[in-house]
Length: 312
Image (tube, helix red, strand yellow):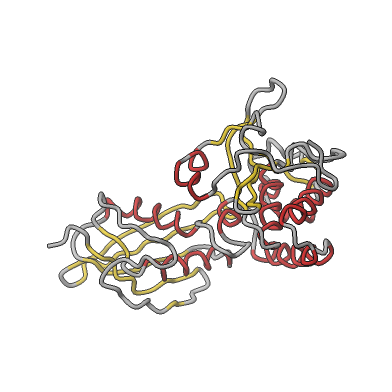
């Protein structure tokens, strides 16, 4: 008997009691959109992983209070559910072409709580997994962000700028000029708007994560591939502290940019830099791993300057 037991998803239940029909079962894990890989150290996997991932991602985008997966499986798999869910959520937060998914969704949530249980059913068990996300914003705030971002793309005439680097510069100059650093709430762990695109757009204040999330959203909306990077940074001998910045893809290669450090300056210093030209920043976690490096090939040199408004 195969060591891996396939989890048959019966329903997805959002907090608003919206019932999603079960996806069609496959005899093996789907590899289409998400490259879902079966972990060899787990006893279970989803055969309809693509449907589960898409549905959970949409639930998060709609700010559902909880997402419940129910399924039936043979045997006892309780010990593997936490790891299974963690893997699943990594795919939920994976990059897509949607500006409000990928890193945007990842960094507008503060993780999730997990509850799971089982009860006997026939020769096996009925399992229930409930994911309870913690959001930085609500659905109405995200709708306002979407409206404002789309309006900004028109106000900045981004559709009329064919050059990727010039488009990125216009967006970068807007963010670093329009948003002030939130010194009031910087140390307040309970005030989440400081880390959001909503706070940056409507309160005009944010900490580094808010700058990075807004910049990501605008770059993505303008058709540019971008990422949010986290790690530690400290300029001019300062003690390194947690920091967030961005990468943007120009002509097939990625460059660093830090709108927080360039806020309010006459011309940007931390714009379209290669790693060697971007000192005092140290990536950590997944951002420092080989998979991230493979997905985001970095330029070997800074982007050639000057450009209009830019300074080396």
